[in-house]
Image (cartoon, rainbow over all chains, first blue to last red; front, side, top):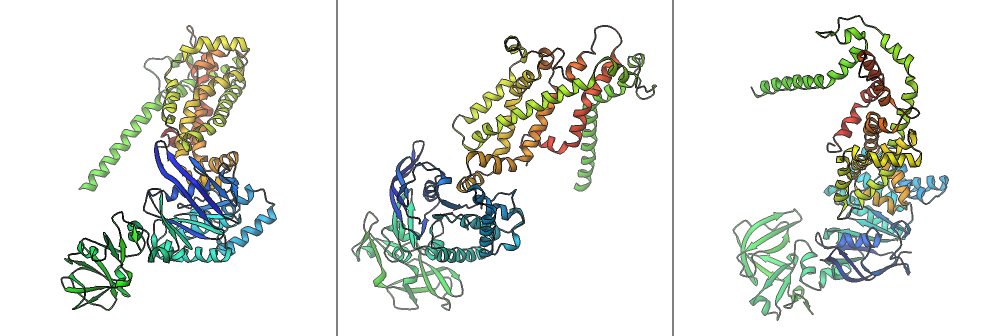
Length: 334
Length: 276
């Protein structure tokens, strides 16, 4: 079980309030991702849940019991850190066994669980090595192993993949998702990478300056961003924002249109502009279009085969059913 | 060309380092040499360097006159005891300063270190009276406590710098893994800080071993360590240079050997964790 409820939680460092009153419920078994730019308070929020930082006011319930003043060791949560935070003087086996040793389990049970975790994480051959002799991906797996042997109420991940190279990151992302499928334990995952958020989450919590901007499933956030911040943060490349006359036509202060919702053509179309930089990814091509009279740059996504060159004039047609409208306060207009 | 200059510069630096090293080591070398001379040769002018009649007579006399082993044992207990006690007290203190610093942590550290600037003789009188009252005069226990207190700021400061090199996340991981504070310090922090703790122990053992002010003033017979042993050979009259040298050589020999075998740790200790 791992239902975590934050009730009017605040956190201040000295006079600086980094988390204004915040309410959030994470359901049992849910994969929740906290996402936001650096300094948005997502890691702080995770550390408050872990108990590594004290909350300034409010309360945190874990499975219905008030855990506000419970020390981290007693909350029944496991955490995977960005730096892995393995114990360098212990072998992989001892690292994974450490929480069990602290829980005073008997040796036979410890061995059984460590072997079990090692085989799940493909670490069996490395059990007698030290963390210094492992690659980044293996270290991360040891850190995860140390977390799963405890059978915690919830897993907390603090940007666990940001120290890995790109290829490994995709692999580990899948492994963590699979782990969640298998264990069905609550997971809270902090990242600044919206791709990680979109691909892994059941529920995404978008944070900015300690404030929750929106909570929802990945597709909800993609389809109906509540405000300009979420609209700009979720989706890659970023949504195009257009103000002024064009927005006024839609009775809005600002309209947003995602790059994948604009079609390009050699003639016709609603708007036109000059091709600046094009990024060819093979499957897709991203064009950065200038001199459209709408915004400084409009980004569009086209099929990989489309071959416009730098300086070409091209024509753009937005899909009218997916234009997002925002009012003067930046809030979504339905 | 650039390469040639570097090579020349390198040998120059090496020569300079040797010169400075020999200059610093010379008094010790001279003491050792003198200890093998007769009293007459010891004060001969011009001084004799190697061409004298080597003799072990001084050592025999010194051993006959006083029980070296008893002084040695006192030194070991006082230096060892004060260091161990100091480390036991300093580890939690340094932990708190390194991992839960407050606004005043730096000030506290500086203030602690500033007590080292106080001339020891300034507090001799009160401490002497205190020792009389508590019956600690000429006891090893009393000296262990005094030397521990004197070196404590250095021990705390050194451990603090070592602990700061240990990523806090690892300690947080231990906390998340269910370790109590005691377990966290015992199973995670201390093993990771072993090199730092070792050099701290070593340096403070040497400092305590060489400490002469308090050991001379607060001991008489029972607790007198090697410093008192040496001092007993300094005499205003009579020819005692060679015997004094023999006594000094015997007093510094254990620490010299210890230092020789732990040079690496010592260098780390002396750089105060500034060099990784």
